[in-house]
Length: 130
Image (cartoon, rainbow, N blue to C red):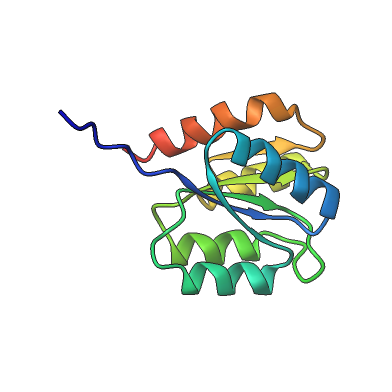
């Protein structure tokens, strides 16, 4: 009997800070996820638009060089409604958090966060789709 291996989850990491992006990619890749990166809003939109299939989860930085509000979150939700988006921010005011959740973010996490909690959170986000 041959067991069919389940497909690896596809994760998009959007963050302009090189060290944070690298840490996220290393952590998620080591956990067995396929990880693609984008450094700003424009490249994130291009990656999502050209992807052969929707991403399972997006880890999205709130403040990017070309985006400092919830517009990118809203655009990504419209482009890929089934994708779970986790917003990462060091600027998590109650208004930003509530706005992100109202726009359909799965969760808002505050920077800095514990990298060991990231893989379980991604799995929870993915499982919440069903």
